Amino acid sequence: MEQTNNHIAICVATYKRPDLLKECLTKIYLLELPKKNKIFLIVVDNDVNETAKPTVELFNKNYNFPIHYFVESERGISSTRNRLIGESLKLKSDIICFIDDDEFPKKNWLINHLNALIKYNADVVTGPVISVTDKTHLDLITYDTKFETGHTPRHVAAGNVLFKSKLVKEQGLRFDPIYNFTGGEDFHFFDRSSSKKNKHVWVADAIIFEHITAERQTNKYLFFRHFTGGINNVIQYKYKKGRVIAWPHFILKIIGKIIGSIIAFITYIVTFKKPRLEKCIIKLASAFGYLFGLFNIIIERYR
Image (cartoon, rainbow, N blue to C red):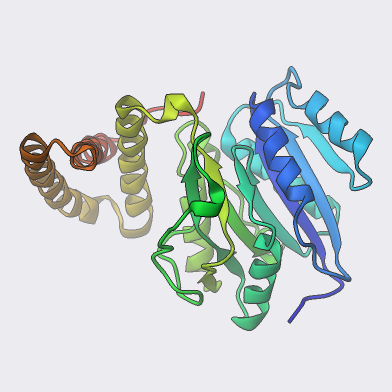
């Protein structure tokens, strides 16, 4: 089962992470590529100092598969992703894939996505993102992808996604700049895609690994990530359901999260098990995020 005669753009957004970008590109070059399709690899650097350029030039010098490199001067993740879309359309891409610079795919990632696109007649396919550290042995990883292939996911993130260009060409979807420094731009984009009746499908074996650096393994980062995630959840909900409905909905969720965090903390005191403390932090952070979101207090995460 294979799609043919398509122009496929593999898109990477990057910002001041040349070492991680190098690993990402290395694994992309090792992908099993579909036959009778034209593949483009596009990197958009959101650093005007072009910190990614030496890495890209290294690959362009040593590989026959060229990287299309661009610099996006307008700071922010939405602006960078929109530039990737724009450059993909200039290359007449039929299918657009997104992967982040701190990620790397399994060899069959692209093939499995394309097969699912055909089998399920999907418009958007997405898959698992597995967190790994420098100490992780990839061959020993076991994981639960939560869903079986064919499932319709509630949300779609841009760290592992492939979609038909009709979303951006015919339907005019773009990432909203309001999310440039907060994150959540991908949920907003694909929620709007879903509202346009595009078919979203989960692909359990289209796996990407996300490299978790040391600074992202702290409780402080865990709190901040789920705090800003909570804010974005409220923003998304307001967009879909309206502000009036959002207030009682999230007040109840705040109460539930606080109760859950207290229970998790008590369990941690009794057992001293780290996952219980992390669960407490996540629930408490989400509760504060919901509260900030209800009052339209936006915290910039990526500046």
